[in-house]
Image 1 (cartoon, protein in one colour):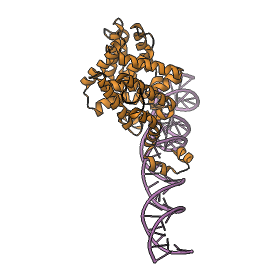
Image 2: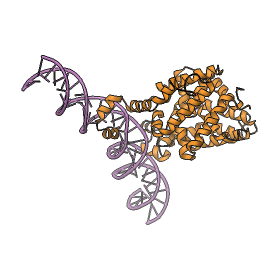
Image 3: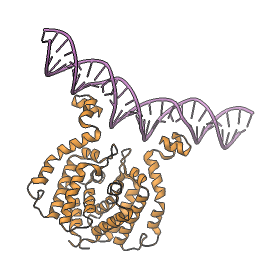
Image 4: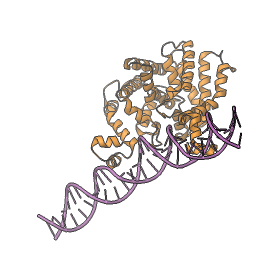
Length: 161
Length: 161
DNA sequence: TTATCAGCCGGACCAACAGTCCGGATTCGA
DNA sequence: TCGAATCCGGACTGTTGGTCCGGCTGATAA
């Protein structure tokens, strides 16, 4: 926070007055970075926008989220860190995506458990997991998108097992 | 740490000499709490022990982990918190379970993606998610076990969608 | 142009907390 | 009994998120 304030050319007080807390700053940054994505989901073209078949739309949204997270690894890691007693699951932005995915899954016929299933799918793109997969296992971005996409497909459409 | 040392009737130095760090203490506690479970998985009776059909065994292991986590919510939350720069995924105990689940999934015919799938299934029982589901949504223990069990089944056996 | 005042800003300060370190107690061997 | 090696406790340090107040600025009125 000190460094951020200095880099921004303001005092620490100003920073905290503007964003409330470290978590507030991070969430504000995240909100700005994800604005195009939110817009595309709300009213953009297929397959992200409304009108796509629910399962395909869920997969598209998850892939888009994955890409944003890969493009903002440090920020995302900080965002999802439990800080100030606020967990990821209490953040408004998480609850919004979760609600959307739950609704889509319900539409897709996953009546029961659509809420849990939405949590599970979102857990597949959690920042620390991505960080581990990239940093530790050396997966490339391509491999990650393909792999996670496959697993999500498997969850959504069944393996036929 | 101060409080722990005081409660244990020793100095803080002793605590750190014995466990290395806060994370070390938490992992040691966790290792002790999960010792019976590890033993049951290694050489116990069905469905946890070896010999069970892979998918069933995966489901049984996940349910057992879920129960332990529910019985030790605070400890588990602390364990999975990124602390000291060490994420959950770098912990030896996580890697062991992940390896086991990966192998079982491979045996079950999920050749490709068995590793990612194992991560996904373990993400379904992450401490902060459980905490959110219990604390915020008021799900009972029973409901959680049933719900997560159903979702895991769906992932393992397909929904037929 | 100058006096007054409200609001905003900066950065010194505070509290919490993981981790270190050294003076002293204890124990073991001679 | 004495000396040395080991172990222990808790005061201390460094870092960091967050607070607070003295002072600056800019607007307004005389």
